[in-house]
Structure formats: structure tokens, C-alpha cells
Length: 264
Image 1 (tube, rainbow, N blue to C red):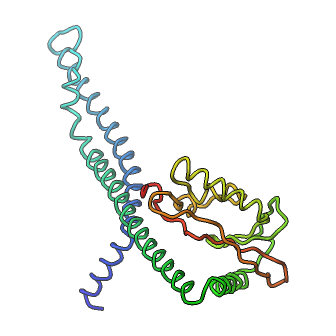
Image 2 (image 1 turned 120 degrees about the vertical axis):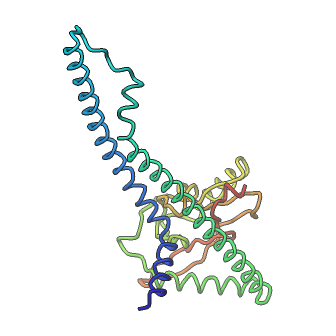
Image 3 (image 1 turned 180 degrees about the vertical axis):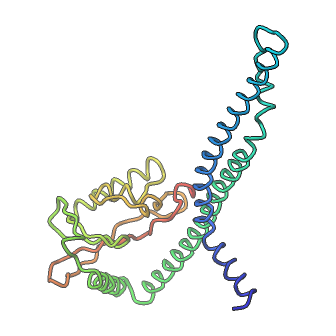
């Protein structure tokens, strides 16, 4: 492999993993700063003891009762070079952490922008399908897609989360099963509408709280607001699991967006 190819691959690796590399550098820097600071403190203490001993020797030679104590300024001038390495390492550590945060923020912003574009294109496609086929056929297509999702991800004892309802439900965004009822889910939807009315935004995690699902990192980051988005509603598709159990698939008329509160 040619050297230019190696350089290009190395550059691509660093670019793609900048956040992780900088974070690792920050962690290593914290440990290294602590170690260097401890070493510098031991060396500084030894230097001060040595200078104090020299002062005592000089005082005895000059028949002085006690040697003069070192002032803080004298101590600082004597030991400050020892703290240069930990100071440099500390500055580098802070820089790594700041740059890692910026790299992560840029990546998140890029992903959010890509998601927003994809969601917009999907909504345009859905609107066009409804316009061409009509509401009934669009609903039939949506139900068939929901059935395909259930077939590809059938429920099992490991994925079912027991709830208070008697109907098996499938949350389409996170692919999780739980037990609930249409009435309970509609009540959760109304609570989110109330939250949107009162605060102008609500997270997907808040909706999960209401229907009895555990929050996820994804749901904490996604949500709705009343400024840049239309009101959402939960849509149901009736499907059958591979073992012939009825199952409701939950979808959303308006998909939650990243940085929904910042958009507001």
C-alpha cells in the first residue's frame, strides 16, 4: 500500500473517530495530570526541605540561633518549574474535552439535520400516496407495513413488557412490545397534548412514561413542539403475530424530532 493511501486512511479514521479519540485523550489526560501533579508535589517538597536544610547549615556557620523561614514567594520561585509538565498536561486535557464536546455537537447537529430532511421527505411521500390512492388504500398500505414489522420482529417472553392492559401492542420507533389498551394509549396521547399546550414541547420519553414503557436515550432526545410542528396523534394498525395473537402497532402522524426543545 502506498504512503499517500495510508495517510488518507489515517486521516479518514481520525475524522470519523475524532470525538472518541478526543474523549480518550481527555480521560488519559486527567489521569496523567494527577500523576504529574503528585510527582511535582513530591519534588517540590524535597526541594523546599533541601533549601531549608541549607539555610540551617548557613545559620549555624554564622552562629545564628534560628534560620530565617522561607517566604511563600521564595517557595514559589523555587518549585514552580516542577509544575510546568502537569500544567501543560492539564491545558491539553481541557482542550481535548472541549474539542470532543464540539465534535460530538457537530455530529449530533449533522444527524439531526439528516433526520429532519428524511422525515420531511417521508411526510411528502405519505401525503402523495394519500393523494393518489385515497385514505382507505393508504391505510391498507400502512397496515400491511405494520404487519411486516411484526412478522420480522415477533414477540417473545424476552421482549414483552407486561402492563395493565389486555391487548398486545408494538411501539414502532423502538420495536418494543407491551400490554395496554386503546383507551389507555389515547389517555397518554391527551396528556402529551396537555403538556404541549402548557409548555409548548414534550419528549417521547414523557409519552413512554404514560404508556408504561421505559425511557431510552433515543426517546430522551426526541420529541414534539407546537411552534415548528403540527399536532401529533397516535395511529393504530391492527395486525396478527406469527402465533395468531392480535397486536396493535403504534405509529405517529408526526414523527418526533431531535432537539425539539431547541427548535422551540
